[in-house]
Image (cartoon, rainbow over all chains, first blue to last red; front, side, top):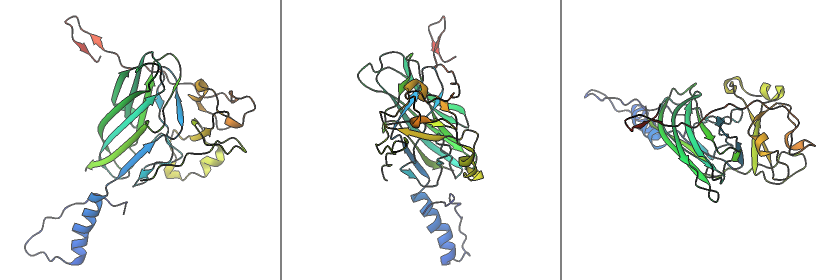
Length: 173
Length: 105
């Protein structure tokens, strides 16, 4: 079951009557939300070009997991959480092998960078992975998250599929 | 959890699986078909291509016009449209203080 709001726990009093309706509202619904909070897992299935020294938003196909419908094909760079709260957000941008320069990944909220990582090139044989993890508060309506990519190899590089991924988990109201 | 299906190449008549993608702006028809609550300031459509029908890597880094012929262009690896300019950025670098500390400016 998805679409439930975070529970608002009730503090019981001695005179309260625990009817089925009350128990369902207070326990069943709340536990159902807590056992299945919003989660989204995005992964690229085809490569994307990232030009050198250019701010690039990673684009995503329809995600494999998106329990509250935060993805929209019309805005494929975004995850728009549908419930207010803190989301543990994690991503990796994997770049094609190239021995020059650095690689970056960023977590952007509403177009502004909240966290970023930078790593040096892994060389000309292996892909270079730039990981990033950060908790982000979203209002559940208009706030959206994007994963940014940047590199300064001097040439355009493409992302590596599957390893370029992003996930967001509801962790706190 | 399921693995997303790999899209096919968007070249008319090509059934090969896509290995690359880029973005273009939606057409007026696509925009009209998008529910109002899903319309944003940065709407895009993903364009997929197999290897032989891909545009060039440098060109694919841009967001393309709504009328871009993409993998159907007769001029591959050029697409024929004038894509949007890129947004310049720099990777963050550290500043070194005279006392030896290296900090984020």
